[in-house]
Length: 195
Ligand SMILES: [Fe+2]
Ligand SMILES: [Fe+2]
Image 1 (cartoon, rainbow, N blue to C red):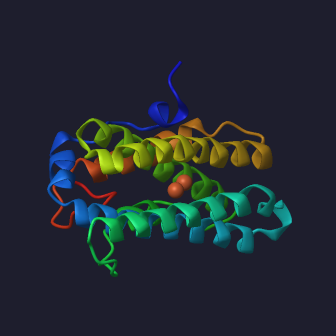
Image 2 (tube, rainbow, N blue to C red):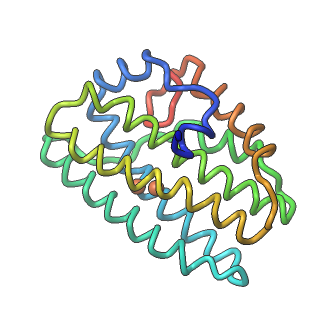
């Protein structure tokens, strides 16, 4: 049986993105570090916005895990002789955010689905990169792949626990928007960019 991350994405990462990633390992790692930091921050933001759903029980450990990933990527950046710095953000997360509802309870539903989709894409990209990565990154990315796959499931489990309804129709809509985004040419190469 396929894993959740495989079943919820509408298309795989184009080879052109993988080629670009391998030629831009510094940007890949630096932007990846930002992604881990943003993943922690999104989880904390959900805990803060919805205290009545007791999200802290599941999302606080997730946020800590993302910050550990952040620290691990920072060490790798250092080890490879690259310089951690701020980068202009791509429009990936913003595109998903723009497609989301701003009215509750749909806003929370869309946030949980979006978080799951972003985890799924991270997972899929780690997987797609694995055969091509230098040994110095291979082991680390295969470990992360396992963690982000778990996070992908966790966000959908939280949705089901809170709303007790099927998320698949809405997930499909947002997944198509996600897929359209990564299948376009992108002037800015990022971990979640187009090609
Ligand atoms: Fe992570
Ligand atoms: Fe994650």
